[in-house]
Length: 430
Image (cartoon, rainbow, N blue to C red; front, top):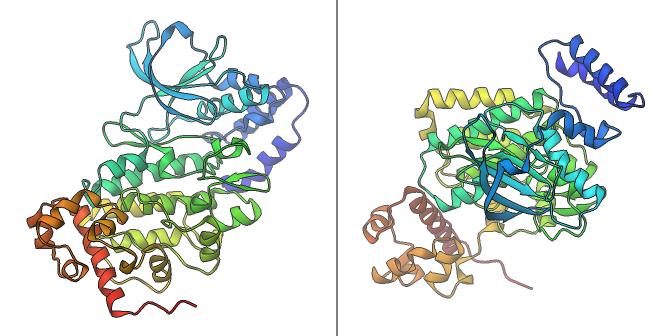
């Protein structure tokens, strides 16, 4: 039903009358026509973007905000941790984004547009906007504080320490948030683990709204590649969005599949060290990422469903939530793991995994697979040559001090690849 109504909404946006009052009246009429359905309103449809900020974001008195420390840098300025104490309410920790000095009117508008977007959402898996500070400098966006930070770095810091059911719980939360956004006809365009925040209870919340469309050409962030009309995070973006800039809920679903892969690999970089152009070429040849070590078959199949070439054949977020709910209710299904990689995955794995001959020592190999912390363990146990390494078993790893299941799986998977490389001669180089 909602899809049938979307063209009418596009018509309202395109033909809105001059002046805010007429637009507000049309929007109210549209909302009344479909009771119970809340539709996202692009703040850039306002002739005065500041009016969108006033409508969707609560103004906070700067005296209520206390910045305690800088925890990062954003495209527009610093990201800080602090406290928010509104009279009559309890004091809370808050994340505070500040707009750097010397900004242009466009930069201020783009910065505050994120607040205009966030302020329209109300869901437990969407980052909550507390308000904005626009009447003094620096201009600020104040949101709830997420203790564990970005999902990708959080997973890397806790590699192997979560069970499959915990990881599926995280994925379910992200999918639920995206279902809410898609129901509101909002397309994120930059869904990635780096843009998911995690609180102290491991609740994952979607954040960073509108960032990709506002990145300036001078931005040095290598994650985003310049294309006609803006910058795109190639590794997370659906092929039709890269080629034709067709960003839809279906392209968000593709990105969600990449997020699934990031989560199940504990924050591994999608497509490893391949160049962005190599990633584009590989996708065009129907190659897809292989299952991460010890990834349940059902989850990798869901990833492949999200990566269908035809966008209309990809699942909807509601279907993804239902599929994950079934897995959570039947945790035994998560124990089924595919050990052999399919034909579509193998070429990418080969390209992303260097041949063991490229390493002069076992230590170099361990560092390449991000297990360098165990170099001393291997040396002390006498595993100093690749011939000896290929004989290492799970029991050996446990004995020498590799106790985390995720780390054991990563090392054993690399050893299996090494054994395959031993049996398969390297192609001659011209």
